[in-house]
Amino acid sequence: MAAQNRPGATATRLAHIDGLRGVAILSVMLFHAYARWPDLMPFSSRYAVPPLTTGWVGVQLFFIISGFVIFMTLERSQTLAMFALQRFRRLFPAMLVATTVIVVSAPLLPERPQGTIGLFDPLAGLMFVDPKWWSLFGVDLKPVEGAFWSLFVEVQFYAVAGIAYVTLGRRGALAALIVVFALAQLATSGLLPSDSLAQRALFALTDRMGAIHYGWFIAGAALYLHARSANTTMLVLGLSSLVVSVVLATVPGSWIAGKLALASIAALFVAALFAPALQSFLAHPFWQFLGFVSYPLYLVHENMLVALTVKVGRASPWLPTAVMPFAGMIVVVVLAWLIARYGEPFVKRLIPAPARGTTASERPNTAGASDAIPA
Image (cartoon, rainbow, N blue to C red):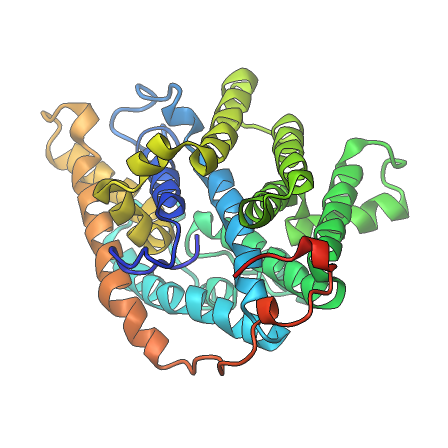
C-alpha cells in the first residue's frame, strides 16, 4: 500500500505490480461499499455474497506486493537510516493529507461507521503506531480509519525486515522473518499451555507486531528474489509461504469462500510474474490508474464511502440499490487522485531526500556471491 509513482513512470517499475495494486484496492473498496456494513447500508445484506464478501483479501494481496518490493528498496539503501527515511517519505505524505481530509470531513458525515474522531486519535495513523502499543502506556487511541490496521502491520514488518537485512543479509533476513512468523503461529496454535506466561508473552508480542500476517510478506520477498536471480530455492520458498499462509489464515464468514479467495489472490500474484498476457492486462491504464491512487484511496475511502452511500439512500430511495454507492466511490477516487497528484508530492518535497551513495546492490553481498541479485 505504499505511495505510487505517477502513471507513465513505469520504465523503472514493474507495471503489472502497479496493476495488482489496482486489483487489490478495487477489491477492498467494493467489499466496503457493498458487504462490510450491511446493518448501515440502505440495501442491507442484499449484496453480501462472494466475491463481494471476500473483497477483504485485497489486503493480503497488498501484503504480498509489499514483501515483493521491500527487498528491492533494501538493496538500494546504503544504511538502515536511509531505508527508514525512504519508507517514511513514501508513507507519511499521503497519510498526513488523507488524515487531514478525514478529520475535516468527519463532522459532515455523522453516518461514519466509526463515529466521531477523538482529539488525539489521528496520532496513531500519523505515527504509524498501532493503538495496541499505545495502550501499554495507558493511552486509549483508535485510528481514524479501521483500514489503518494493515499500515501498522506493514510498518512493523518494514522495521523487522530492515534490521534483519542490514545485520544478517538477504537470506538471514528471510530466515528471521520466518522465525517471527512461526512464533506468531505458535502463540495461537494451542501447543503452548493455555494462559501460561510463555504463551501470554509470546502472543502479546507477536499480536502487537501483526506477525501472524508475515507469511504473505515472506512469499512476496522470496518471489522477488526469484524474479531477480532465477533462484529456484526462492521460488519454492515463495510458493510454500503462499500455501502455508492460505492454510493457516483465519477467515471471516464462509470458510470455503474465504480460503478460495485467498488462494485466488495468491495464484493471481504468481501468474502475474510469469504470464505475459496477464502482465499486459494489468498494464492497462485502468489498472495503472487504480494502482496510482491505491494508497491514498485505501486511506480515505471506507468511512466516507459508507457515509455517502447512506446519504444517497436516504435522499434518493428510488434509485436502484446497486448504484447507490457509485457517487461515494466517485468522490473518494477523485479525492485519492488529488492527494496522489498534488498533496503527496507537495508534502514529500518538504522532507529531505536520503543522500545518494553506494547502494546495497553495489556493496559486497553479505548473503554470499551465489545469492547476488543483478542490478
